[in-house]
Image: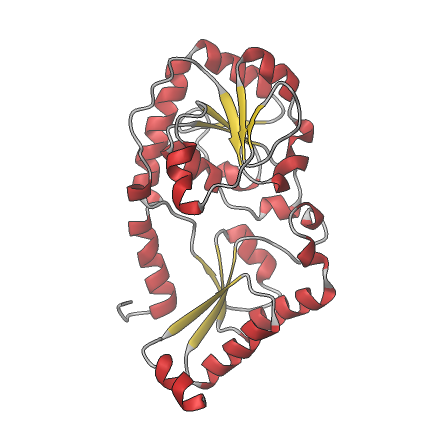
Amino acid sequence: TPYEFEKEVEDIDVVIYQRQSNISALTHLRAMKKLGKRVYAEHDDWMFGDTGVKAVNKIYEDRNRRELFKAICSESDGIIVSTEFLGGLFKDLHDNIIVCPNTIDPDLWQWQDAIFPEMSVGFAGSYSHRRDFNYVPMYEIAKLMPVTFIGFDPKVSYVNAIGEWIPIEDYPKSLSGHFSLGLAPLKRNDFNASRSAIKWLEYSMAGICTIAENFGPYEIIDDGIDGFRVDGDWIDILSYLSEFPSVAEACVLKAQARIIQDFSINTGVHRWQEALMGSQVAS
């Protein structure tokens, strides 16, 4: 009943709708607003552009879904995004854009000194990244060192694929130890420009040196210091690191130190508090 619903949510101050696009979520949002709650939409992808959308999720192509996405965004008190670039894309849907960068919970990661007795390269991610590899010379890379893919199988004989789905709570432990150099290619379009640098965060905390596209979210990497950015020169960078593994090891340690300082959940939670609660203390 309406009375029971109001009693159930009376201790809630803020409600966040993460990438919702259904009528139930919109109905719920309107009910919470009527009760005086603050409501926010949260997005980590740009699903309203045409470029790159088909590579990720077909539901973004559905006109009704897109309209529900937009309604939830426009009727919210604000939109939470993970990057400034993504926030700029959402400005047409709301004038209150809140940037809360992705962060890492150090307790979930078995981070330690990186030691690379044998250099190897790999990728961890979903099938949605398959088009990003069109410009990466994987066959030539496989001649340099062993290659492992986690998350999707590129169906080529020179790659060791671990294709099964890994529960999110097991992912940090499962990522560590599979490879020493982590690839993060991105096809250069608006959709990928709106992504976050989550792979750099995860690779680094798993003791993996990141080799990323010099584009969009990975411009955050201090090139040659806490990871590497490439402009097509994948083979050159990987060849260099295969010859000098100590450079990759040093990059991992510097990345981990930077992430703990600037991208830890302990820092991130305060950004969320300030953005959503103002001077109040989040419970």
